[in-house]
Image (cartoon, rainbow, N blue to C red; front, side, top):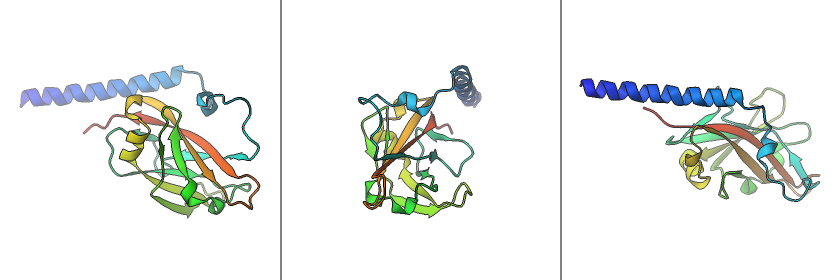
Length: 175
């Protein structure tokens, strides 16, 4: 039993050490916007793309995803005076990452005001395992990764596409 207790103690120390490294790296790096991850595709964005605010894990205090987490993760597209989230075509929503070429589609969507600004927000549920495997996020262990949401709007709207991103921290799952 003493050997098992030593293993658990070492495991806890390793997880604390990893978390400390992440915090130090985050504090030491200059504040970079999510746009620094976006590759230059020959100039400015098209005029018909509307930048929107995205929140990963809007219901949680900590914005992270654990590598072996089961269940779902929520990503919210925040509504505003310029964007009525109910005009988003549900079958066009995709979540991707600059770290891979894969895309994931949400399996459920809900409309509610999560940031209490008076505008409805689109809250999407995605399968955690599918997100990790399709976007190849397991190799991003202890790093912040930007997740990008892209969707189409109904034809009668001014902009035809919305796009936004938010960073999330990829952490190991410990017992």
